[in-house]
Amino acid sequence: MTPSLEDRLAAAGEQLDALIERERPVMLGIAERPGRPRAVGVLVSLCTVVLVVVGLMWVNRSDDPTRTPATDTGAPLPTAPVTTTPPLTTVQTESSQTSVPTATSTPATPVPTVTPTTAAPDLVRPTDVSGLFVTVSADRPAVVDLRDATSVIGSFDLGCPTGRACVVASARVMGDTIWVAINDTDPDDPNNDIASRVLSVSPTTGEIVQHLGLRGTTTVLAAGRGADGVVYTYLSDELDGLRLVSIDDGDISVLETGVSGFLLSDDGRFLAVSLSNPPAGERPRIEVTDLADGSSNAFQTDGINAGPGAWSPDGRHLIVNEQWEDGTAWVVDPWATSPEPSAATGVFLDGACFIDAGTIAHRTWNVGYGQGDAQSGVIRLTAVDDGSTLADLGQDLFGDSLRCHPDGSVIYLRRPVVDVDLGDGFIQPEPVYDAPVDLVRIAPDGSATTLTSGPLRMV
Amino acid sequence: MVPNSGSERNAGDVDRSIVGMHRSVRRALVARCGLEVGADAAADAMAWAIAHPTELETMANPAGYLYRVGLSSVRREWRIAKRRGRMLFEPSVEPDVALDDELFAALGRLKRDERVAVVLVHAYAYSYREVAELIGVSEAAVTNHVHRGLRRLRILMGDRS
Image 1 (cartoon, each protein chain N blue to C red):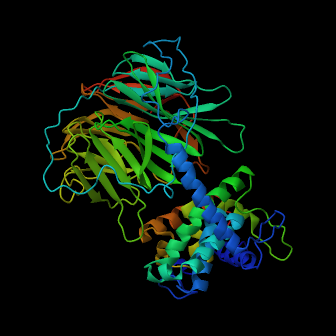
Image 2: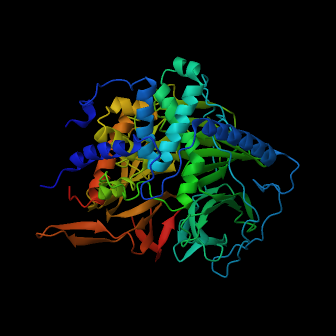
Image 3: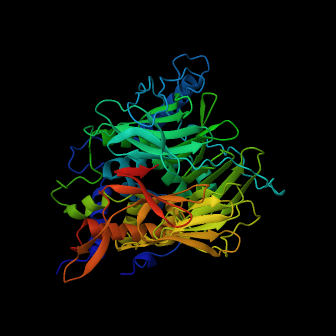
């Protein structure tokens, strides 16, 4: 009889112990090496610390002309005119690389402060919500297409080094700037050396500026400039995990470690950071800050991996994504003394957005977790105040990302669904993830228009 | 076997003797980083422990702290091992220890925290509480790691077990 997985795991413990309990270091499949004396280990560790400190002092010295952690103040890279169609200009690749100080060498500084404020912040917060968003096509992976509700209003080639595979991790339209996080790798490189960049693109002038260039094991996930002038960047590293860093006048600082989510509002005024893997004894929490007036708050979340999903245009509400198995989301008033999920709106599915300060658009289509079956649905408009359903847009929809537009329309990526025979006559509808998708606009009256098709992603 | 009951050991806090902590930290680091790097990291952590007995004595969670010390020391070695293209758990060539190579290959493909949780809970019968204390996360997080890790293991192994 085949042993169960649990039995095999139990036996694996004995196997591992049999190896690691030996007096010498064991390297399976690799020639043995002499054990490192403990004293030498300590000495090596001390030397490493000294080298790290000296290295950081060298990197952080202010008069080093070769230091380029951030190029805010440097000359802009060659720019691309705003065009709706190719040809596109190519940006030169970054001229230098830098590294981010590790959390162990640079203590994480919680900036901005997250001390809960007792006074309610100013809630009159008009924001400029353009409704613009960005798509990337797989056949032009380093070109970002800036779109409004109906058409492409500009395309910008960020440059992809020859022989490298580029992936835009995110591109946020914030005010008059697109903030792009882009990474590239050599598909044939077994070491998976990653080059990552943070760029800002001005749609009006076509100017592209590189703010951060890294080389090594770090991937940039998202970036944007806050209302305080600081460029916030969300990083993932194989060894250092998920971190939020700031780039301020050329200085890079680690603000938070163990960050499971990061979100700036469209105008850069509101910052939300989730910490889902805190030390034992602490609960997962989300920290919010008004970067304009410095007010801040922090609240616990029940969702173990929950992170910020969308700011309402006025900053009064925040959609929190579960970021876990069920793909649920909920609304909170992040400035409340004890923010709780809104009972009115309840729990809905993630990927939702705000059409305006009082209306959420969210999907009802879903893929059952661990089941893989596509369940079609609608785009539901829900009132934030009382949770009432204002409208159901479309019918029998299935897709990926949603984007809300101030004109009341919602744009989404329609993904094809096919029936798959799982055997014994059991047919299950499943999404086709490698098929082209349609970019579809659902107008406030429910009418649908296909804007374009292709291997698109909203980023 | 009830994996989270700690039935083969006394449920409760991680053993706080030096030997007990060494065993736990080493098991966790080996599960996370593989035999070579994990064992070295554990050795570095214990070197720190021996050099800092007073600090260790006053800590609420010394094993958890040592685990983090080990993780800190592992970074450079892990980079080197990765560049050499080594697997976390290489197929065994030890004549007297028969490793379940298929299982270890699948374990190597789990996320790190999932792997640590699955190995400590199911291979060593640690309780969720012990694992949470050792790796510095909540019990709920351990529950999720174990749940997801086991499911992924079954998928990776084609449900043959």
